[in-house]
Image 1 (cartoon, rainbow, N blue to C red):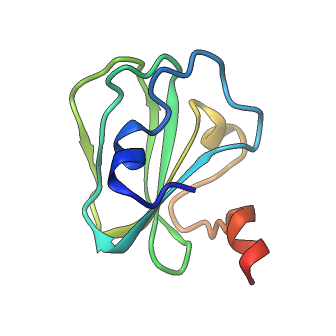
Image 2 (image 1 turned 60 degrees about the vertical axis):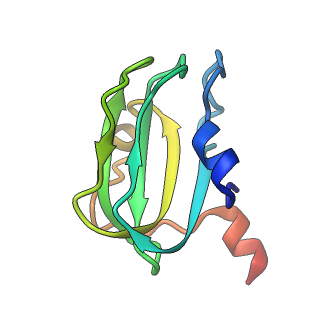
Length: 109
């Protein structure tokens, strides 16, 4: 879970091996906002899920390419972002409108 700006800016940069299936990195923002992400210094392709404050996916960026410096900006304001392995969203049928509650959130309830 990433809640501060320094860790949020790093994300999965410099990681050279894929995540385990079903793993991801959760980014938490204080309030919903337009989120911008890029792939600078990121070695693995990623899907990024952007969720509202009810954990419903509002936007998905599929297969962001490693080292891409052009940022992707969400179409709607979101409170959470989850980075997962590239292609995993389609593989597991995750779509806009899907409700995703990360395990770390389930543990807090």
